[in-house]
Structures are given as C-alpha cells and as structure tokens.
Image (cartoon, rainbow, N blue to C red; front, side):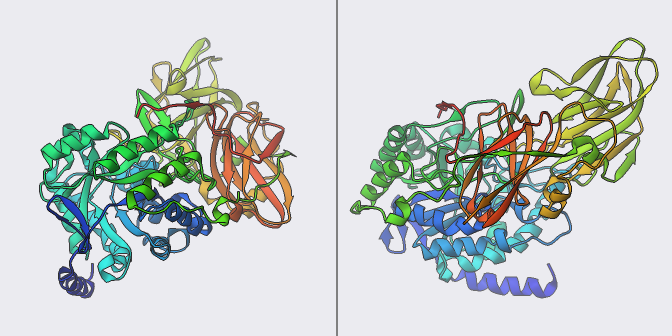
Length: 617
C-alpha cells in the first residue's frame, strides 16, 4: 500500500470506528438496531451463477421468506494469476451482486475467507499462493499473512462501502472459515479479524465451526460471535453453545439441507420434510438459520474442488446440492417446505408465489445431435510449446492453474515385461508409448503402474496428466498437481523431459472452431480421444441439459463457454447449459474427449444428476 493510500485508509478507518454495527447481541439475543432480530438466510455464490441470472435467483430466495443472503468470496476467481490486479468486473463484480440483493430487500452476510472450502478449487486460494515454497497456509507465518493483507487491501474497498452502516446491505463478515477443523492458531484468527477491521469493517464479525466442543476448541474466539455449521442434531449443538458460549444467540450459518456429489459416487439428496423439520427445531429454540445451499448453482469451467479420503474425490460439475432452488432455478418441494418454515418464523402470511417464479424456465426441446469428430487429442496437446527440464515439472512450476500437461521423454524399455510407474501422480494420467495408447494411471482405479512388454530399444513416452480439481478441505489443502515424484521404468528413473501446458480455460470460440476438423497426419490415436462438435438451431435462448451418451471423460463447451467436466462414471449425467450462453440462430457444442468418443450428443428437457443416495448428515 502506498503512503498516500495508507493515510487515506487510516482516515477511512477513523470514520468507520465512529459507526455502530447494525447487529448487536444484548441479554443473549440478537438485535438489528433496536429491534430483536432473527436471521433467516440462504447461501448463493455469485461465482456459481451466470451473472445474467443473479437477479432471478436472488428474487427466488427473497420470495422463500429469507431476509438475508450469504455468500463466500473466492479469491482465485478474482486473481487467478500472480502479479495481476484482482478483477472485480463482469462476472466478478461482487459489488453488483450484493446491490442486487439489497434491491430485493435482503441483508447480506459476506464470508471473505481467505479460505472458503465450499467444494471450490483449492478452497478459494489461488494456486500461485499455495505453490509458494515453504508457505504455511492458514497460520501466522508472514509469507501467508502478507499475501492475504495485499488481497484484503484490494478486496475490502469493494465491500466496506456496502455495509449497512453506510447505507448498504452487508450486516456481518465471517472471520476465516471453519478454522476449528484445520488448526489451533488463535493468533492467526485474531490477526484475520484485525485485518478486516483495519480495512474499514465495522459490522458484526463472527467465526463459524462445527457443532461440537472439538471444533469450538480450535476455531472460536472468546470475544467474537461463534456460529455453527451442521446438518443435524441441532438441539445438541444448541446445548453445547449454551454451555460453551453463554450469552450468545445460536446461529447455524451453514445448515446442510442437501449435499454435494463426487464423481464415481451417488447423487445425494435429503428429504424435504425431514430437512424442514430440522429447521423447525432450530427456529423453535429461537435460533437463526442459513440454508447451505439455498441455490447451489454450477462449478462452471474447471473450478470444482476435491476431497481426499484414502483416494482423491473430485467434485462433480453440478453444485445443485439438492438445494431448495435447483441448479436451473426450479422451485423444488424443499423450497416450499422451507418457505413455510421461514414465513411462520417471521409471523408472515404464506401468500401464493408470483406467476413469474412458478412458471418453468424455457428449455430447449429434447433432441439428438450428430457429432463431427475433429482434431485428435495427441495432435492437439503436442501443438503447444515445450518446456524442457531434467525432472518432470509440476503444474505450479509450469505456471498452469488448471487443465492438462503433456509430459514427453525418451526411455529404453527392457526386452521383457516391465512396469512404468508414476510417483506422486496428481491426478489422472494417460500413457502413450511411441504414439500407441498404453493405459490410464489413477490411484482411485487401482494404482499408478502400467505393465507392458518392451523391446530393449528407445521409445517415446508421452504422459498426459489431468488436474481433476484442487483439494478444498483438510490437511492436503494446497497440494500440487502433475507428476510430483518422477517416472520409473522398472526401478530406473526417466530423466530429461519436455512439458506442454494445455490451459483449457483459455480456448475461445474461434480456437474451438479451428479444432473442429482433423489437421494432423500423425499416428492415429487409438484411444478414440479428441474433439467433437455438434450444432443446433434456436429461435430464442433457453436453458438446456447436455448429455453425452457413449462418451467417456472430458470437457464440454457451448458457444465457447466452458460448461465443465463430464465423466461416464457419474453420478452426474447432464450438464446444465444456462440460457445466457446460447443465442438465436446456430449454436455449437464442442467436446474434448480424453478416453472414448461417442457418435451423438443429446439435449434433454430436464436434468439428470444420477441415482440418489441420502447423505449421512
């Protein structure tokens, strides 16, 4: 921060210190100004909803009876590359999102992290930050705190003027996020709180942690409102709060009324009546509640995160989360159940919803689209510029956030059966030997070893590694991507590599059109991978649900907009295509398939997120 801006900031802080927060706690009860208050909230993330649909989704939240909107701030959504100023324009104009909530009559809770979890890539941290050598995440180490201070210097001027004390809708800010499930550095938590206050935050501050003593032990501060995150047994959590946090009103800032999905697992749902009953229990005990999620939206692009439980667990593209407001905006049975509870808690009459909210969104009619196969996968990834190194370089060392890296090297395979082993593979690799596909390496699918016969002669090894999403929760947060430990033929390391980075998010509509037709005369790619395209005509834009029967695993675009990943393992079957990315006239779907190309795509008139299985709440 410059000296002039520092003086201005201190002047702003002095003015801010004279303002009283909008929310207050007196005699164990929550007040908004002079009136007793209860927060009836729902979470919607601006970064998971197309900006042309923000207003619609916010209107649906308000009509449910909520008085507050809750959102995280995803640092890596605003500043994906080191050295570039954060972007707060267009889709990233979080100020506009917050003002739309105010226009709908809602207060706003902001959760700026810097860590957010949220099943979002890297828990919201930019990969350039977590790749800094020796950095200690989410603790008092100066390399980390200095980077966060710089980010807050740029973020808080976007938010502080929108506080309720200044005429805006923001009534509260969260300090960090569920820190009690990660660490016990209270000095860091106090620093995080102070960093917000020094940059003009005067509204209520709070921490959020799981609903037991264990999480409070690590994440709560004695002089900051402690809120809870849980999906069941709320009566037990409330008793814990009475014992541990006497004099504080209970606020479940994340009531998990649904759940997210991982690839290869089931689609999670939660019974609407049962979830509403849990809300009723909390409200009867005078608690405040925020539904996580009220509207989940979509992990567009490559921004879904991963969990890790003995194997990597990549999150699917949809973030529908069985929320009251479905991914495509549909008002579900759970919506009406939660609406009844919220209206009853507020003492409001449950009037019929406006027709514009009940009317289903226009949907592209069901149709099958023949595809044209285009450039082959190997031709495409080989076309990128090479970077040479002795040992394989990680995504982070290559400056690639998300996408693919092609590793190439020469090696001698013995004239006998041998193994090719990738040590430290993150996450999934496709192996070619002299241009012939040799197998998939994936720790979730049985190991990082391929067995094959050699000839005793040098061969060209090509290993294409897919980053399936960065870990967003737990002790492996910030883990690198790519080949982190090396490649062995038998017990012998292979050295001297070429790497080609493939930043899929940089592909625009014109570049994708150029990949629609084969351009290579190289050895055929026997894995059946590569590009495929299909076109369809619309009189007017409408939502669509894209299915890819016969395809294996890959990425899909609509008119150059990267919808996200697909994978035949499910559970997700269809990708949501929001109306704003389609247009009157000709529309184009482009697919980059990693494993097995199909012959046709389908546009369906309803979503299919896979067979349901109830989560353990």
